[in-house]
Image (cartoon, rainbow, N blue to C red; front, top):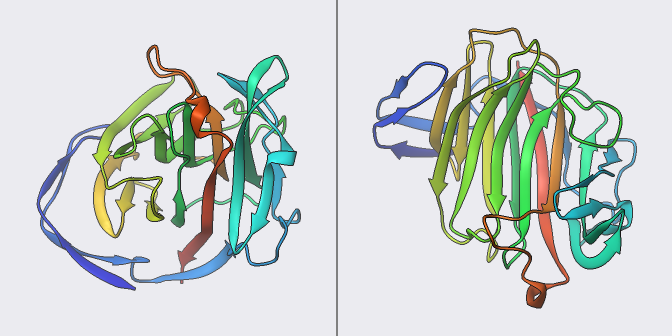
Length: 251
């Protein structure tokens, strides 16, 4: 548990919400740990995970790029041809589905530009990709484009039923996300989504206006062009490294 005071923030969502000065306790009071992977077994627990295997943006995601070493999930990123792409990335998707509760992961992103590393939740379509066919919502706890080592994006997407609506998008300033591990959290409730970085509440989004579905946990890194900036080949091979991922439910 950690308790950190934060300053007043005005946070945008489906409608604007204000977060006054408060004390943040993580995990939030009243929660219990019900599912986690600490990545301490020396190999991926395939009872808990399936692989992301799509070809999207600049890379094809390969199971061979996923490993577990020294207590970390390693998602390797490489300069190699596969699936019609010039690069390969990696990702894992939880077999178990979740809904309301508190989600947390600690990780660091690859160095050098060209990689989109994420901790997010959305119902998996069972096809290895990212289609939101069966998902009412997508919760983007962290989306980092590695050209920006000192910031990341947080967002919520309402998917089904259509129309699609993006809400609460925010860019969060940070220390270097590749030089050290950092901790992200998300509290998902029937009316709100709250996002945390290093124990600090950074965004609150009103999600009370639409029905919610169950969702899977995604840990992924893929090749991604930002503007005219492609992949920094001099920084390859590299990896995103995840220390743990945890899910808590109300007691």
